[in-house]
Image 1: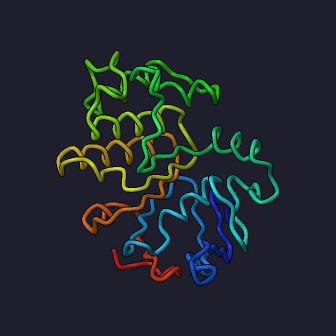
Image 2: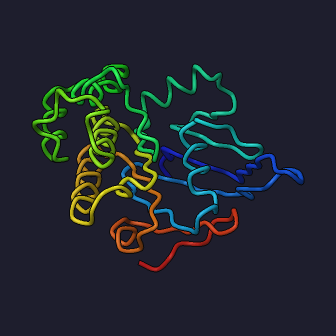
Length: 226
């Protein structure tokens, strides 16, 4: 068996509540191989976004182990987790986190430059494929929510990550644009050998990925039928 790009083993996570800690993840185990595409579904509050934050090292688990590219994230400092994430993970979350003082081109290139993987030709390709051509010199405040989301997706893909962690990447897009974005995510993942772990509420989009899993009350169900 090859080494997983992402490996969660018996992971637990709780958050403070008015009447004590509230369990969000209860012993979740998940292995994602290089090149694999996996959709994660589940009702609101089931822990999907929490799982992605743990997988990307943006938060730490209360129990169990999270490994990214074989590295145990619990054993790393915040700075070391950030370096590992920058080199290997492309993040697309519901908060776009674009830099207000940078235009579209600079935002797209930012992560790739930081990771030493900047490819201007890929930037141009991503900007065109995501319908952002002509907007390169605009700043985030001059863009719609859907346009900002597409910039965030381009930024994640531009660094050619080993694993793409995407939380509802088509959530603010119309169906046709959402389909085009997923086409691009799947195409770039296949081209670079990256894995894709995508949270989505759309069973239609989830069915296009290689595996579908469901989180329910903090526990991971077995694979859903294709």
